[in-house]
Amino acid sequence: MTKWRLLDTGLLGATENIAYNQALLDAVREGQAGNTLRFLRFRPSALIGYHQSPRQELNLAYCEEHGIEVQRRITGGGAIYFDETQLGWELYTTKQAMGGADMGRLAERICNAAAEGIRKLGVEAYFRPRNDIEVGGRKISGTGGIMDGDAILYQGTLLLDFDVERMFRVLRIPAEKISDKNLKAARDRVVTLRELLGELPPLEEVKVAIAESFAEHFGMDLAPAPLNDWERARHREVVEEFSSPDWIHLNERPREEAPVLQGFHKGKGGLIRVSLWVDSARDHLKQIWITGDFFVTPKRAVLDLEAALKDTPLDQVPERIRAFFADSGAQWMMLGPDDFIQAIDSAVAAREAAV
Image 1 (cartoon, one colour):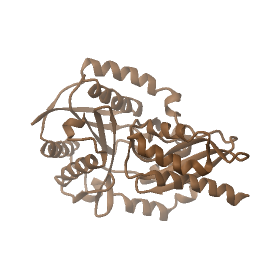
Image 2 (tube, rainbow, N blue to C red):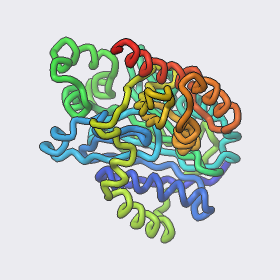
Image 3 (cartoon, rainbow, N blue to C red):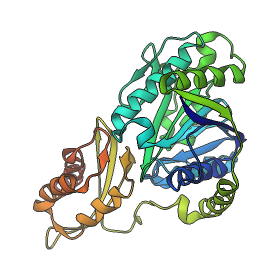
Image 4 (cartoon, rainbow, N blue to C red):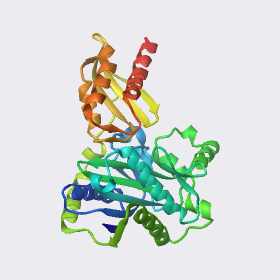
């Protein structure tokens, strides 16, 4: 049995919750804290993945009007709406403790454990690759993770109850898509604990079921314990950093007046969006911005790929992407060089079609 801390930070705003992600991950990486299972909940929040642009993904006017806090996650993935009707769980640990650094295999192990916890509540939940948990083909939990040095953060959410219409309005979805037909289609893709059980079990019962399952699967000796002084101090620092518009708009979409081409590709590992600044006279890719709904470790690999493609002849882009993937050592969950090549090709094809 391995000692794990059980931590419940309760209901918080987005900035405080995301700051805990960074502070607790830093604590494990720096040897200032051990393995931790954390439970958390959010006040109404619109969260974008680390590689996304808020203006591309969110209806910012709606968020401001309805007091919905906008924040950037430190993990990848897509934009999501969070509120009190969802329960979050997170594991903070090390590669050694989890038996390796293969994020795909780790995701499967953790999701299987979480699914077993949900089954303890009386619903038939199972892991669905690449990182979801479903009941009868409908998603009840989404997950994702990040590695930083030897440290790992893996997190998931459980839909206790959910307002699909509000989610549609928070995310940047055209108004014509928010129809009864489309709302029904969205509801048919997800399911909540309330819908499955008829009523919600006590929140503490849900937490106990999930905690017990993680303990059984990973040999955890779980004991409640508070934050330590190092974590509290680091959390205060990160809250200040993450409160800045510079953090929230870190991956902002290029200016509308910039000579850019837009493209995208949906692969097994998620959606890739690209914005290309092309020097048409030389047929060079001057610069590229990559955003989207995907996971990569380390997360700065996206910035490294952008740098590797700067001022590249268009006909040499595929070769350079393949060389980057061969040498970078990054882990792109279910994404390969061809996914990024296809995203870029879609943007270039749009230019050629317009000529």
